[in-house]
Length: 158
Figure 1 (cartoon, rainbow, N blue to C red):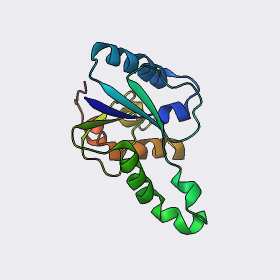
Figure 2: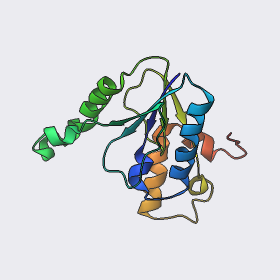
Figure 3: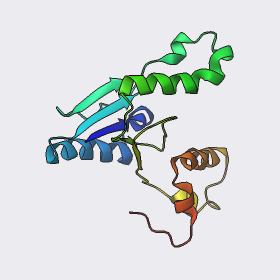
Figure 4: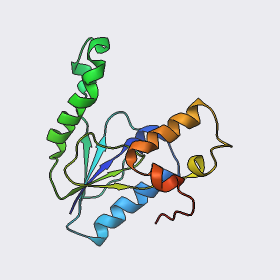
């Protein structure tokens, strides 16, 4: 089985529960299944070490932003160009699984997608978490497909 993990949480946190969760689980999953191939994608500078294991391949995303200059002209095209470069770099093929560490979604993906929801406080108690930062965080989760499940009363997520 082939799993591509977006390591964005390692860019956002120098330490924390979510990165600790993935740092502990990924090597253990590889120990349990010798056929598991994990590709850990890091797009930029990481604030902490990425998990290491013989079955975990660390890949740095191709920096398309550095090639498309001047940035103000190319900015609208960067997400599409990044998606194409990412697909070529990762070998986007059916049967692969995309697993984000922090609610990112690939622009185009031929395989399955897994989302780990680690905190639904913003969705369940929005009246206590107001302001632009909290609104942006809720907005970031929406494309991951978790929004409708998180906001339904009585919904249970595994």
